[in-house]
Structure formats: structure tokens, C-alpha cells
Amino acid sequence: MLQLTRRAHWLAAIAFALAAVGRADVLPDDRTDLLYHHFEGGGVEVQGPSVLVRKKIGDSVSLSYQYYLDMISSASIDVVTQASKYKEQRTQQNFGVDYLHNNTLYSVGYISSIEPDYNSKTAFFNISQSLFGDLTTINFGYTGGWDIVGKADKGIVQPFRADADRRNYQVGLSQVLTRNLLLGLNFETDESEGYLHSPYRSVRYIDPTVQRGYSYEPERYPGTRTSNAASAQLKYYLPYHAALDGTYRFYSDTWGIQANTVELGYTQPAFSSWTFDGSLRYYDQSHASFYSDLFPYANAQNFLGRDRELAQFHSMTVDLGASWQFQPRWARWIQKGTVNLDVQRMLMNYQDFHNVLDPAVIPGTEPLYTLDATVMEFFISFWY
Amino acid sequence: MRRINWRTWAALAAASTLLAGCGPLQPWVKPYQREHLADPIMSFDPNPIASSYLEHVFEVREGARGASGSVGGGCGCN
Image 1 (cartoon, rainbow over the protein chains, first blue to last red):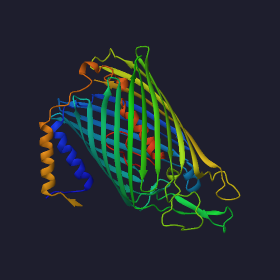
Image 2 (cartoon, each protein chain N blue to C red):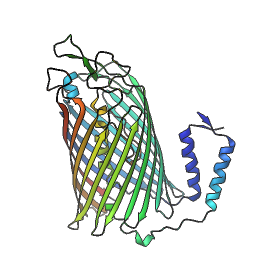
Image 3 (cartoon, rainbow over the protein chains, first blue to last red):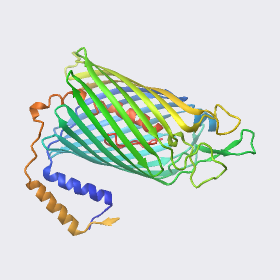
Image 4 (cartoon, rainbow over the protein chains, first blue to last red):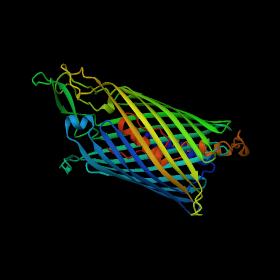
């Protein structure tokens, strides 16, 4: 007898039904993308290249490979208050295989991420199927991750090791509603367990025995975290050849964080070879149940966190992009190419994370922290 | 973990057989009406290399993650 978890039971049942009514799906296009990315804000600068190559083998198989490099220079508020500035590199490689068989698309892949103090291995599997005359596409995916958490001091790896594992389940649906309107729905559940906090980060507590009024102790997170996220996206074709899209996502997890994401976007082709797009993204979240910017005393509760990623905050991101399409005469095997530039300005306002770099007489009354950042992607794409 | 019994599998097999016997649902948008939908500007994710990078930028700084529609999950990186 086959033993399955409740979630896998549900997924297997749906896939079983799909086999009876399913129709065609297609392989992704052959393409190569060369990208340069740059992030700067909050004392952190991250930049580097990324290359993505995808190629069909025969009519049924498509292979993909992506290389990604982060060159990190960090003097963030956490780093300068609890450690010292550092530089490091993170290298990521993605391997993927797509297999089209009997009108069903199977995708498997492996992702490796390596940095001096964190190694991550991820494997994923996805099934995609079109239904009802290709008006509906439904997909199911599973991702498993195995992380090794380390520690480095001034670039020297320390004898520290802890494990963190992840399991992720995804369900998605793409639906043609009218000749001009598309709907996308996605649902994702993530389960993490193990060492989920940072070996470097600390929380602060009121300490009247020291001059500044507070001291630090290591953070302590729960050993598990389960999250659910659901999103809906609409894309509408405007009659003068443009597109409007809107997305909403709701997120909730067992750490007490609830978050809302709303994004509105607009795409406008122009001058026969150009495409311009812009978007506005709003995000807000509540803080984790064990989060505090300043605890009343040492060891105040079972779990302690002061990571601003777990704080209450809202953010606004503005995105502008331009793309120029060309047909290279010097390489007939290339069907088309595009040159693209995207720039984002991000502003994050924290409601309960204080900027200790601007000290106050009474701990906890420092100004609230804000972060503004500029993100840029420049990339060239070829289709062949 | 929960064990699946033979009754559950039999029900699934019967449901699948019944579904296969149904007539196909007629598409309400005919193939010749889909030229707008096929336009690249109507793609949900026209540039996966850029969207996956931006998703990583947000996930590293925000508590929320997931349901972006991308296949394969995240890198699990620090």
C-alpha cells in the first residue's frame, strides 16, 4: 500500500483526473539571456552577471542552464551595529529539463547556491497541462531544499554547521477569460524546519547597567515555519495595442506575519521596435509574533527576533523599463534579439524597527528606520 | 502520515473514467480570436531571467514569499 501525506494525496488525485481530460502544452522558446544586475541601498551594494541558456533537443525535450553571481559589499545597519563591513560572493547555478510527452509538460530541475557561509541545494518537479481547447493551463509543482548554514568571521569560515530543510508545494492556473483578458491564479505552501535564524544577528534588550541603556543577545527562532501564499493576476489587452495588468497576493505564516502585495503595471509598444513598461508595487506586512525592536530584559521570551525582515513595515516600488527589438543581419540563425533596461526605486518604511545609528537618550525612541534602494537590470536576449 | 486505502483509489479511478467519457467543453474563444492573447505584451512572464532576479530582491528583504507563478521555488540562499 502506498503511503502519502495529505497534501501529496490531493495533488496525486488531481493529476489522475487531469490525465482523462487533458490537452496539449508546448516547450519553452529557445533563447539566451545575458544580464547585469545592480542593487544599492541601505549600505548594501550587490551586483553581478547572470546568463540563461535554453535549447530544445528534438521535439520533446528542452534543456536550460542559468549561472548567477552576486558580488556583495555590505555595510547594512545590522552589519555596522553588530559586526563589521564585509565583502563576499554568492554563486548560483540552475539546471532544468522540460519534457513534453502525450501533451503534458514535465519539468525537473536542480538549483545550487554557494556562498562562504551558506550552501543551498534545491530540487523541483512541475507538471503543466492545457485544457479546454488551450484556454486553461494548470500546473502542479513540488520543491525540496536542503541548506547548510555556516559562519564566517572576517572571511574565515568558522567550525559551525547547522541544517535547514524546505518543502514547497505550488498550484497554478492560467485562464483565458475573453479574447482580451487573461487570469492567473497561484497558490503556494512552504514548510521550513531546522536552523532558520542567522548565527550573526542579535536582539537588543533594556540594560540599565550599561551607558547606552541596552545590550545584545543572540536571536532565537522557532525550528519550523509554515507559510501560505495565494495570488491573482489579471492581464488586459487594450484596443490601441497596449496591456494593463494587476496583481494581488496574500501571505500568512505560522510566525504571525501577514502580508499584502498589490501591483499595477502597464506595457506600451512604440515606434515599431520599442516597448515601454512601468509598474507600481505596494507591499505591507505585520511583524512576527516573537519580533521586537527592544525587549524589556534579557531572555524575555522563548523566541527572540529583531530582523527587520520580520518587522512591521510597508514599501512602495516604482519600476520603469524599456526594450528595443532588433533582427541581427550578421547572424541569420538568430530570429530576433532585444536589448532591455529596467530600473526600480524602492522605499521601505518600518513601523517598529528603530535606527540605532541615530542614538537617543531613551532606548527605543530612536527614529524609525527607512530604506531606499535603486535596483537595475540590463539584459540582452536572443531567440533562435 | 495517512494511508490511502483501496476504496479511495477505486473512487479516483471511477471519477477519472467518468470524466474521460464526458464530451469536451467547447472553447468560448476560438483559435482565430486569439491574436491579442498571442501578443508578447500579454505574456505573464516575458523575461524569466529578470523576473526571477527581482523576485529574489524582494524575498531577501520581505517576510512574504511565493505564489509568483515561477516554477522551481527559490534558491534558499541567505
